Length: 210
Image (cartoon, rainbow, N blue to C red):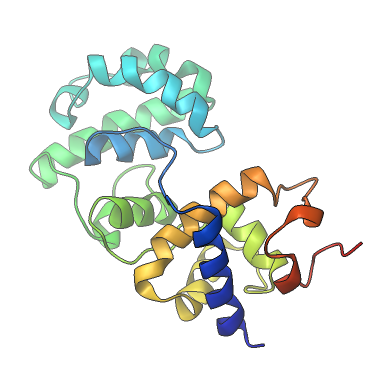
């Protein structure tokens, strides 16, 4: 079985396991997803979802957040970790959105990654979820599980992204990454993967076959 064949089978099995491929971050517009994803770095989505309602009530748009100092943003996101750096990035990216993009979130990887604190993972998520573009979001679940399935042979996010782009049908790539997050939380965890109940075990070279 080739890598591409394995990838296609994995896609279909994950579709059966997780019909609804949705982002676990809660948001109502592109700006909220951008901010939430920045906050999610080294922090759980559940924690981010706890702090963003108050943050967005105070700063609902880039125009409003652009008027805030990092010190004013910090109390809202303190529990997310690395809050000083994240507060600085949120203030700066809001200003840049207003000054260079008319207060709108841009729709290309190149423009998004120009924003302070926004890397390829966040940019891909926004491009995929907001603008419906093919995107590969290489978070920790994606990197770990793709490696275990021998779809990729690197832990470098960029190399994993490029490898998966060659294997995944473009129209499936964004949902595939969302499903990997759900699968990674439920079954293929970092420390104790549940190979005995895994629907992908027969395809996985790393599975612990009992």
